[in-house]
Image (cartoon, rainbow, N blue to C red; front, side):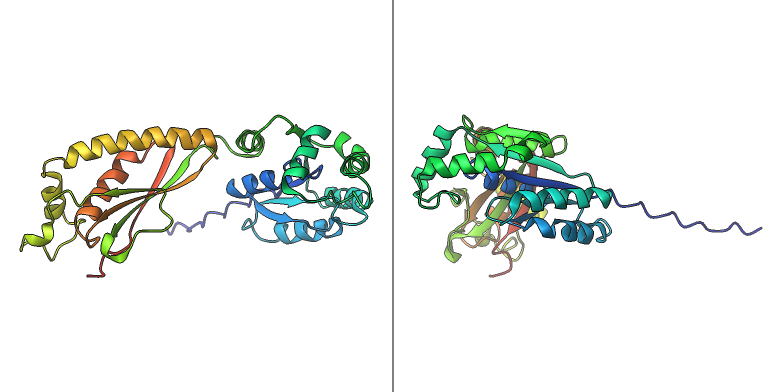
Amino acid sequence: MTVPHTVPAAAAPLPLQLVVVTGLSGAGRSTAAKCLEDLGWFVVDNLPPSLLPTMVDLGSRSQGAVGKIAVVVDVRSRAFSSDLRTALDEIGRLGVRPRVLFLEAGDDALVRRFESVRRPHPLQGDGRLVDGIARERELLRDLRGGADLVLDSSDLNVHELRGKVTAAFGVAGQGSRLQLTVLSFGFKYGLPVDADLVADVRFLPNPHWVPELRPHTGRDVAVRDYVLAQDGAVEFLDRYEGLLRLVFDGYAREGKRYALVAVGCTGGKHRSVAMSEQLAGRLAGEGVDVSVVHRDLGRE
C-alpha cells in the first residue's frame, strides 16, 4: 500500500506589529527610532499620518518579510493631531493594534537641548522657545493621554533611554548582546579604518620563513599549531581575552552593540589569521555573537 506523502503546511506569518513613535520635539524620538532599528524594526521617519494605513497594508502583504514597523510621526506633519487620530482608527479597522510610544521631557530639559544644538523649536515661529514648547505640549495633550507607553527623558542620558526602549520593545536578551567582528589583516596593506581595537601579533615568529608552512594559511592546522607553540602566543590570548571582556562590559553599560577587533601581522596570511580564529573561539558565547573576517587572505 502506498502511503500518501503529506507536505507540511508552511507556518503562518506572525501578525504585523506597529509602533508609532511620537512626542515632544527634543524628547528623544530619534534615539528611540534608532534603538528600534537596532532591534530589527523597519523604521520610517517623518511619515505623514495619512500614509500610515498604506504602510500597514504593504507590511501585511509582505508575507512576514516586514513584520515589525516603527513610524516616527510628529508636528512636522501638518494637520498632525486630527490626521493621526483618523489614521490610527483606520489601522484598527484593518485588524492591526498599533502601540503608541510617547516621548516627553520637562521644559528645562527641552530648553537646554534646543539651546545646545542652536535650532528653533518647530512651533516657535516668531515667539520664544518656551512658547513653541507650550504650543506643542498642548497640541499633543490628547495623544499623550491615549499613549500605550509614556517615557519621560528629562533625567535620562541616551544609553538609559535606549535601555528603556529595548526593555519595552525588544525580545528577551535582545539588545544586550554584542555583535563582534574579529578581523585579521596585513599591516603592509594598511590599518582597517573602522577598527575599535587593534592588536599586533608581529612579535611572533613568521611562518612565512618556514618553507613547508609558507604556502599554507593560518586556517591550516600545521600553521595554527606552529603559531600557538611560540613563546607568548597562548599568554597573549589569555591576557587579551581578559582585557577584551573588561572592555565589552563597558560597552554594554554604554549601550554599544557593535565592535570590530582587528588582529594584524605583516601580510595577513599566517599569524593574524590563526590568532583571530583562536580569539573569536574564546570570545563567542554568553552575551557576544562573533563573526570572523580575514581581510587580506589570498592577496599574497
